[in-house]
Image 1 (cartoon, one colour):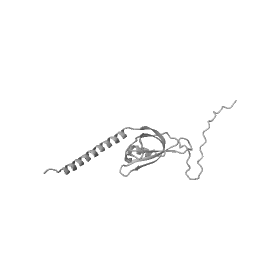
Image 2 (tube, rainbow, N blue to C red; image 1 turned 120 degrees about the vertical axis):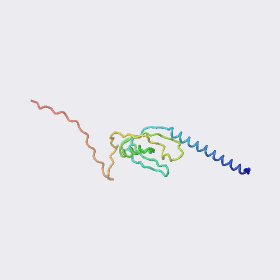
Image 3 (tube, rainbow, N blue to C red; image 1 turned 135 degrees about the vertical axis):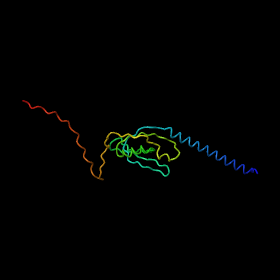
Image 4 (cartoon, rainbow, N blue to C red; image 1 turned 90 degrees about the vertical axis):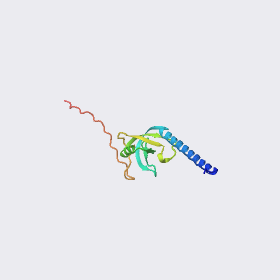
Length: 163
């Protein structure tokens, strides 16, 4: 009992579809690997991390936000970033509210947000020296800012009394 011509065509169509889907899957995997291996840009950004949370339905990634201020009194620019590594996320959580420098890589053309919601992937964190905030933030709405301490004035050396 052999296969009929229609059954042979049906089996050939199934194998053809399996082959096409396999080739498409392999090409997609190569594309993702290439986009994750090659970075469009990399650099450092400094500022104050103000938000870091683990997000995602299926693929959980750390998503964060950093405020970068160029001049006192100016509106801060926000830098949105993604962290894959839990150790780096822990360092960021410990540095929350302090000035840090983030080393990041930018990966473009990734096919889904499963890799992160942003194109900027943080690879390292460095604490900056105790840098004061660029402006005083009042703790009570409408309250005047706290007075700044007066700069220390140099003391003149004491003179010996004349005899």
